Each structure stands twice: as C-alpha cells, then as structure tokens.
Amino acid sequence: MITTFCHHFGYHLRPPAPATPPILRLRTPTVVADTHTLFSSMKSSGDNTMSPTDIDDDEPKVKESVIRLMTRLAMQYNAVNLSQGFPNEPPPRKVKLALAQAVLSGKDEGLLQNNHCDITEQELTDSLINLLTKESSEDDTVTDELNQYSPPMGRADARKAVSEYYSRLYNYNVSEDHITLTLGATEAVATALRTVGRPGDKVVIFEPFHELYSSQCEIFYLNPVYVTLKPNKEKNEWDYDTDELKDAIKGAKAIILNTPHNPTGKVFDQNELKQVVDLCLEQEDCYIITDEIYEHMTYSDDNGNQRKHLLIPEVFPDAAHRTLVCNSLGKSASATGWRLGWCLHPPALSSLYRGVHDQLVAMAPHPMQYASLAYLNLPTEYFRETLSSRYINRIRKLADALKSIGFGVILPEGSYYLFVDFESVKELKGLSPTDAAMYLLQEVGVASVPGDNFYGKSEEGKKYLRFAACRSDTDIDNAIVRLKEKLHPVMM
Image (cartoon, rainbow, N blue to C red; front, side):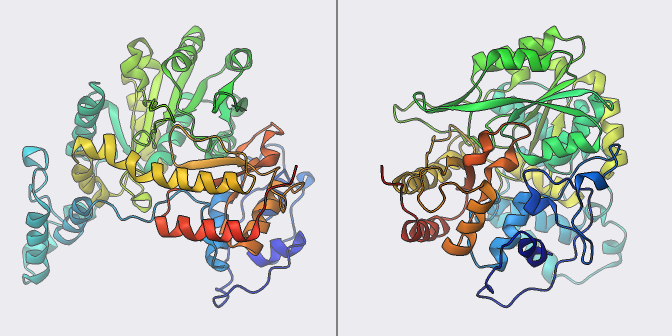
C-alpha cells in the first residue's frame, strides 16, 4: 500500500485534496532493499518489508516500476504529473478512427489497404456511422476477425506496412518475414534478450537507463554490466568513457542501445554508433538490441545543429546480422496504452524470436495491429517535423524554469525528458533523490522520478531527478508556477 510504505520510511503524507482512493492491492514481486528502498518495499497488505537476507540468491531481484508508482502518487495527491513519459495529446484522429473501425466492424473491409491508406478521415467517419446505425445481421457473428487472435507474428499487412515504413523513412529494406509485431517495445526488448541470451550471459547497458532493462535481465538470469554516461557541461552533452565500454563489452552476449536516450536525451552520433558496432563485431557472438521509441524526437541546438537518429542496419549493413531493432507506436502516436510494437530481427534469429514471442504473449492486440496501418502510413512530415516541433518548445520552457531555480540542466538532443541535477536547489540540497522527489510531490505538487532509479552501480544518480516534458502546455505551465513558488537556488 502506498500509505503503508511511505509511513514506514517516515513520510507522513497529509490527506490529498481528492477523496482517498481505494487501497491498492499490489502483486508481490521479489524485491531487494537497495537504493530504491522506499519504493521496492511495496508488498501486499499485511506483509512485512523484505530484507536482502529473505531473498534466495537464485531468485530474480525485480520490483514494480518506480516510474509508474510516481504516477499513482501524482494522481492520489493531485500533483502535476511530470514523472511518467506519456503524452496528453490523443493519437492522430485517423489512427483512432482506424481502431474504432477494427473494433466495431470486426472484419477487414479493405479501407486501409488501398493507395497506402489514402482514405480520408471523413470516409472513415462515414464508415463508422454506417456501422453504428446499421442493424445487426448474422454475418456480424461469423466474421469478427479483428477482435480475435491474429497470427502470433502479426498480421501480414501490418508487418508489410512496417517494412514500407523503414523503406520510406530510412531507405532500409527489410522483409516482413523478419518483422514481428510485439506487445509494445517492452516485450520486443524482453523477447530479444531471451532470444540471444542464456542464464549467466553478460549484457551491457548504458546508465542511466530505463528500469526495464536491468529488471528484464534479472528475470532472465542475465548479468547486466553498466557503462556510465557522464555530463559534459562544456559540450552540453552526455559522454561515456571509451575504455570503460571496451572493458564492459568483452565476452558480452548483447548490448542494449537506447537512442534517443531516456533519461538523458542523448542521441548517439555516427562515430559513437560505429564504435559500438565495431566492438560488438569483434566479439564472437554479441548482439546489439536497440530501443528506438523516441526516433522522431530529435532537436536542434542553439546553433541550429540537429542530431539525426540513425538506424544501425542501414548505416552499418555489416552489422545487420547482429542487430535487433525494437520500436513501437506508443510514444510517436501518443498511444502508449495500445501496447503495439515490433522488432526487426536478423533472418537467422527469426524463428527463435517468434517462438519466444509466441510463448510469452501469443500476439500483439489484433485491433491495434489493424490501426497501425493508418499510423505507419501517416505523412512523412508527421514523423520528420510534427513530433519534434511539438515537444521542443515545452522542453525549452521547462528547462529555462528549472535553471532559474537552481537545477543543473543539459538540454536533451532527443526524447522528451530532462535529467537534472538538484544539488543547487536550496530546498533539495543534501536530500537523497527519493527524498527530493517526495518533497516535490508533497510540498510543491509536482511529480518527478528519483534519479538513482536509472542507475545500476554508479553514485552519479544520487543528485538527479527526471522530469517528463511530454505533457500539455497547460500542465507544463502549472508545474512551472508551482516550482517557482516553492523552490529557490542556493545563494553562492
């Protein structure tokens, strides 16, 4: 229970403005008392906090998401939610109409098949009105295909649409036979890890990192090894030590590469990608697993130079046989709840990848697969311009506000997060990341994520918080007002 674990660590939360919601009954994962003790101590009602000595060494050390916990706390205490990275905007109308068409019709009527989905929104709307007003018939009960199982690897037309998407945007040709539709990028990465890794294998992860990478390694008994990204304030970017990467990748089975990066916003450039590729290919059997869900969110610096997202198998074709590309429509389509992703996998791994996927989740949601036809065929301008322009102003506005009250900010090159140093904020100085996040939640009314949640070994995370700038302008403005009212820079 949220209240129980907060009180256990001394957080006597005042009652939230809205009525207290029903007590959450949470499943009981195996947890470990690490730097995230406040959050990882969540257990079902009546259980005592688990200590490291209670855990069998053979059990995976996993916990529920701290990021999603902060969203629950934000809702409970009426805070502006800048913690979890999901947008306020709805998906493009045409994509929503396509989903409604799939659910209501239950059958493929060819509306999204012809002329690369050139059907208009009005035509889709008219079709939906017809579906809603027509009388039911016997035919409706025997042709409800789109609400039932699809083939495990995904609809052929949707996989073909993914293939055409990469051809159009990256000039990269990949057969739909080597594309699998997944339950979001989360499952795409998990299936990739299980496909290439065996218990005890080493997996290299750049830290800070999204919490799912290390947790998935634990679930599959893989051994995560970390390479630390560190802030270069002179260059206004995040760098890594080449020697540290070389040492880490020796004997590794995989390296996870998230670019554009969550939480720092780093976009790996061609030289950095080449180094990763070369080091990987030097190993006997090492794979690159990319997480590219922020691919269309890249930004220009103050000099007008824009980092470009690069697709490894296109830029480095010699590495295609060692690269698994994981992606989804969740972030780019503002449809994070749809859980529709995909993986491009090397031909030699296709059969095994699909087998693991089939036995883990069976398939991706069928109606969302159909709706992806509309998403994947949105105009090129949507991917190349609309998404970047949507978020850059919010990022800069929030960054300027955070700087003015003492936060150390490196502007992101991509994604939509700000990973900021809070050591020079008067009210937060000397606090742990968890204490700082709880102070913002309770006293300021803004939800963030503790920075050490994104680290596996480094002490660097003890001075950071993550803010998500993907929320609406209204939310960003409200958060800025609250932050400026309650926080002040340390006077030098």
